[in-house]
Image 1 (cartoon, helix red, strand yellow):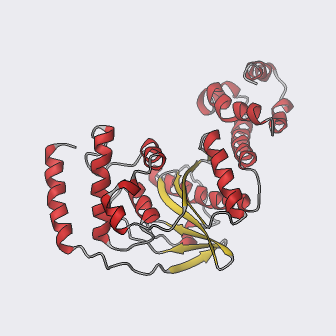
Image 2 (spheres, rainbow, N blue to C red):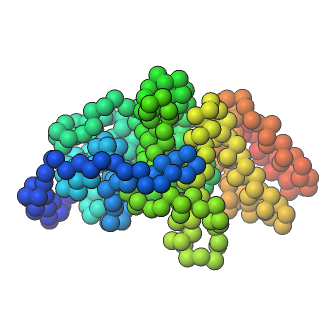
Image 3 (cartoon, rainbow, N blue to C red):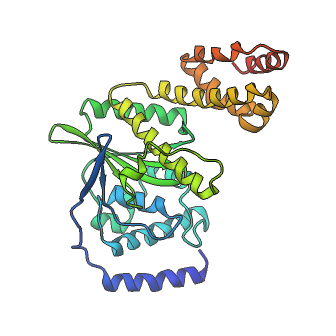
Length: 317
């Protein structure tokens, strides 16, 4: 962080200290419920790019609506991250996945002074979950950890699991809690957008829309799909099976679109290069020895170009 940014931060901290009160903590309010998911009103985001910090705040400060407290948390965390990552955050920059991994793996937020004074100390487990374009994007190791957490949550061995979710273009949190013998799912999003709009079944991806609108629609569709995945996990389904199912279906739909026009080489080059297929599908299938037979659809297409493709793919299995 440059000296001007530091001076600006010091001025902001002085202002925050003047208006700061540690007693302002509104009771969380459930405003809507759909798909057995309750939406909670949280502190609202007005600046772009920093949704990850709002998600962290809502995770560790339990839906606290004190705006000054959020900024104390933000600047304290930014100062630490800049020391670690050599000035990644010059001007309200985005929280990247490697930042979030570092924070969670090293319990960094719990070390902050502001958390020690005002954070939520009730025991909970916290993890990250990344999802976009119909594919769970966590590593196999992370998926195994998530599966274990969901199993223990179902068996009531843990009472609270909070997922910091990076979904397409946005961070939010999904909080799963046992309360009065019932497992509740809370959606907490710093945009405070209506859950009816977020889960609109009529939403479709129209390629004629401007890029930003397409991204917003993609995010809403992915959020709805992720909720369905979490509900499948809560009834005991295997996360790797789900991961493969979504990934294979995405590749299959793309493949069939291109194969209908006999453009398989273009599919390989433009859509799913072989290293991507290997990493996302075949390595996983080989490691877990599951679902590989679902790739049999590829054998239905017979022509010289496809035979060459099959031969190339065979070297990766």
